[in-house]
Length: 361
Picture 1 (cartoon, rainbow, N blue to C red):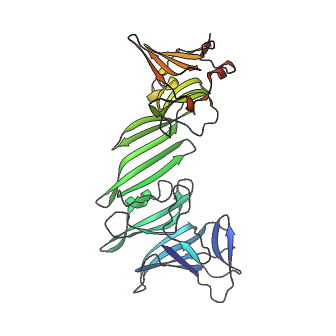
Picture 2: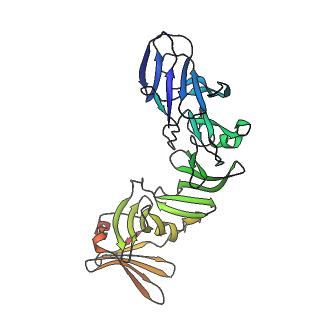
């Protein structure tokens, strides 16, 4: 769907100028406010955007967006703003652009937000969402015409830009953040034309180390998980290999800012199923860490690395004829083989590395 934008400037020259990625129609001389006709987003309605005259260098312009009934020409609603921004290229502007979380978003968005079979309107009213992002006033279509919805409008003000709409699942979604290291993702169902949170997920770096991302979810599918932080460039991968019979799982020996770590991960996102720092040191689920955690023992002559977790002893083998992890309990020993072809690195690198939680023998 495309919104056609026409500049109504009688007897005045017209030029197109790009300013920091924003395309707009500019007058070559000062004059009356500039009016743009927005059409083709609906057979029933059209819109006009009027912005104050300026020198063409402003990214944000004071103005108003009004929606009209095509048949009668009657103005149905109008939204004023101190900061409007929109893209125009060769006389055409795309409608219903909702690039979350940081991309372009249209001045007029026409879609069914409450899943009642009738399309509603979201009109840009400024830049009041997170980090000075676009915000919208939402109007739901009813038997009385378009009516402002405070509940839907809050979703388009209190998060990052416009919310997304999943027509298949009949759900809405928002995202917000604080700095680089905390994000919140909410999913909503619509009940009696009101959005209700059904799932909320928070992602943040763990307080003790940037090596892990902690993910807490509440709602329909509660969970509390940890993932390796893919953006952490301070760690060094000493050794890693996939497990035979379960190649989606991988053992990694990592040298991190918190010392050496043994990690068992699963899947492409690298969900942490077990970790020395999280589970032996005691950082998982906000538990108080141990004051004197059991260190690793590195046996260079046998190319093995061991650590204790309570009554369990873990030994990593990096030998020519033996690659994998042996778990010893008071009752038995279990060896989990590694896939040789998947191996990266070597325990030999520990001879050149230093870590406070490693004892060399």
